Length: 509
Ligand SMILES: *[C@@H]1O[C@H](CO)[C@@H](O)[C@H](O)[C@H]1NC(C)=O
Ligand SMILES: *[C@@H]1O[C@H](CO)[C@@H](O)[C@H](O)[C@H]1NC(C)=O
Image (cartoon, rainbow, N blue to C red; front, side):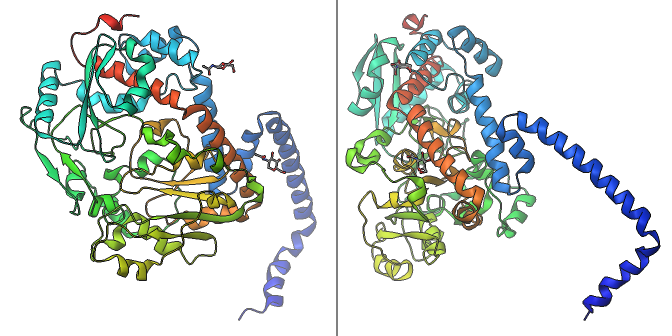
């Protein structure tokens, strides 16, 4: 054992002969340091508050919040204000002319106060693989799909009118259908993606469907990936706290070989009827390695999901309990004895259901024939709460079910801070900013406890939590309106129609 007294004395004795000179030198250094610091402080405090905060950011979460806040400011500032600006921005971004009808689209978007005019990379990413396929071949592929697939509809637009169209989709674009060129749209009825589509060389006259219900779908979903040994090594070291910096990376299958046994859709989906053929096909959700074209999930704005006047959140953030809330059904997999622990919802509930900062659980077991009682015994059962109970808590978890979670917009529109975990890509992915509008959560959830702790207990975290909850609500009100979905779909359909030859007459500006 070191004697604290002697341990202290040794350096003291050595430094003694130099004491006066050293003392003066130290005073001088401290003086210079304080002078520079106060100068810097003056400079910085004259900048926007968040910049001076960057210098002082001490917690890794605070750094992420401030970084993304700046990204959000530049996102807002760069949006075009006129068709001329938007065309210029489009050409710069994609190195080509925008599709016919684009100027009219910009005028429509501006007239409806669309906050987003230029940032539609989700459309570009999804359309791009089809640009290298001829119009003739695309049509042939669609015909092959129509002849052998099920659970979809063909929407036909002719002379600015619907020929065939289901109600929901029709309502969403009725306002602009007269601006659209003739086209046929294959629309998915299922809320799961369908087009794995990595086999460009397949016979385009024939579609082969494969059914992965309750089977392992990882091989087909990760078939494109080249998992490096480095990535595999990361799998072993999964216990480290790493906050999600980029949600697009978090749902990238090829970056996450470990995801296979963490999400039910990968190891035992309840329903997944997919094809490896490349088909231009519209779904409300897809995965990083898949090729569905993305339309907005229209059930998001259905009152069943979004709630009505009786289910509006009236509890101020500061008055909410500092806990995470989630209650739901055991969807996300077809449960089997061997796979139940590999379902994302089960993993979440099992990991945190006894944690004092979490009020979570399953209120109903489904998709588990012959196994539900066992699951209930293993993972517990909670009573069904009224829809507003969640508003008593500061933190709202939102995670995938069989497909994407339909509660997301309702939670964003509440006064709660939304924590979001997903492996599904959606139309809104490039307009929701992580750490500004919501908190992204990794599939591994290693960081979730410390993130909740930060927003529940850290003095700054408490303030940031309220800021993000309110910013998410305001942003959802501005950019996730039904009209925003119409504006997105309008632009998507112009890009889509431009893949085909002919029918250009109505597309003139
Ligand atoms: C757009 O915003 C302006 C100004 O706030 C408002 O007067 C107008 O009614 C809005 N238009 C639409 C279509 O929401
Ligand atoms: C919540 O309460 C705080 C403090 O009383 C107040 O500053 C804030 O504006 C309130 N927020 C809302 C959304 O009412």
